[in-house]
Amino acid sequence: MVTSASPARRCSAQLRDALSARSLDYSGTSFTPTRTASAESPAQPAAVAGDCDECAAVRRAALAFDGLYGGLSVVSLGGPLEGRVTFGADARSIPRHRGRCGNIFRCGDHPSIQCAIAAAADGTLGCSWSGEFTPLFDSVESFIENAAAWGDVQGWRYVAVGDLPLDVVLDAFDELTADVRASGQFSGWWTAQDLTVVAQRYLNPARSRRPQVSVVARTRGAQEKARHRLASAGAEEVAFKAAELSGTVSTLRLD
Image 1 (tube, rainbow, N blue to C red):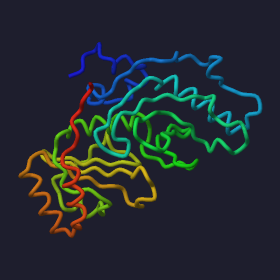
Image 2 (image 1 turned 90 degrees about the vertical axis):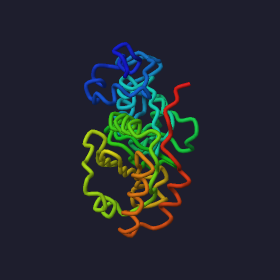
Image 3 (image 1 turned 135 degrees about the horizontal axis):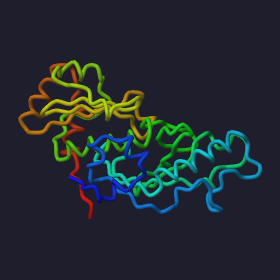
Image 4 (image 1 turned 30 degrees about the horizontal axis):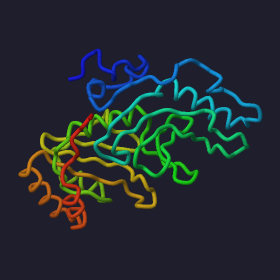
């Protein structure tokens, strides 16, 4: 359990109020302020001469984003942004030429992901490979809730992984209930005592139009039972092979 003196609870009151107790207690979230959360500084201008209206709006959004999330670090044990994401936006990087900003800005770093972690001016969090934008989470808060939910199933066994028809998977397990805090427009979580189903977008949108569905089980017995039910529902063998390669959900390490 994270105490009230933990780095995760030293973030802004605005961010704390938006998160569930599970997310605030998730030890994979830390906060080390690297910038002041003031309105404007010479290093982070709110406006630049020559900005079009769109670029100016994106620059203001990047500045606000950095004031709220700059220095926030989140470790996700699964999903499209698996690993450690450190948030921070540089308003100086927004292009000044009309139409070139794309209504998005770079907003974070990841040690191994090859695409840019980006946010839209409305706060949607996603990725960009070559200037386009693929939404992955409704917001940074949604991503934190997802990371905390992955923390709840760390060490669990993968049953099936792939672009499985989500309705088929959910119909196979009538004991599931929706995890509303972790779910959103771009991700979905359903849980039971020994089973969890996760649906999230692929980091590479060319991979599939369907979300990647991951089914994880707490025990080997629950894994075998769930696999049998999915096979009976028509799940393809490739999803089980992918689960075998994945093994278990990673365990949080903070060293």
